[in-house]
Amino acid sequence: MTEAEWLSCDDPGFMLDYTEKKISDRKFRLFAVACCRRMWHLLTDEQSQKVVEVTEQYADGLVSLLVFQTAKNSFGNVDESNVTGEPTPATCAWLIAFYPPFDAAYTCGTISVLMDRESMKTQANWWATHEKEGEEEALRQTGLLRCICGNPFRPVSLDPSWLACNNRTVIKLAESIYDDRAFERLPVLADALEEGGCHDAEILGHCRSSGPHVRGCWVVDLILGKE
Image 1: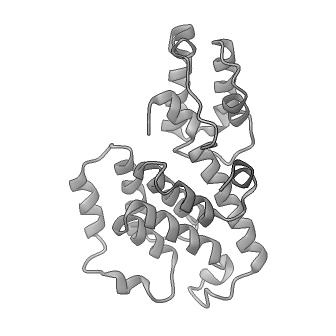
Image 2: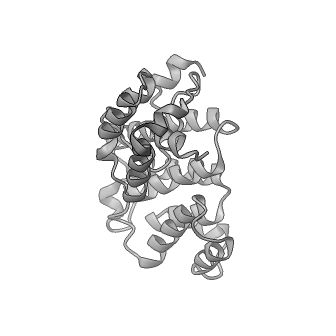
């Protein structure tokens, strides 16, 4: 993959293949979680929602492996045969709990693209998808991956002085954005970075872009030292 292809790609699977050895398990888990959250209105059972939430917390080191395994065990005695039939929104929750991070990201993304949101409301005929909806979902997912991965062809570093400026305002803003999922504050973060001396077009441009923005956002991760 070239830089031009990365920036214009409309196939999230192609992008995931390229990043397989380049980003962390955490970021793959967060991408899978983001795909699940895009189906949250369909993920109506409390068990599946809990697994998604705990998986996200585990990815960020906020809960122990024991807590993560306990959440997984809430599915009961299951194996891969449970997801070889017609996928449901709960299938993605199962996948992010039991699959390795890259495999979970790849499969959750694929199911989200293929899934007919209208037919899934009755859990029926999931293969009868609307092609346009699938294309639109694929494009949304490429946006999620660009938010999480940035531009792998142009690594960016931070000047520590940007973070120390104004009593560590940049760090405090990034923490609040991450904790509250308040990505609408990213333009404010860009202003704070600029005031601190940052003039990097990639960083400022991403913060001021319309997104999508999710947990794992490469700028926020860079500021907070997350991988």
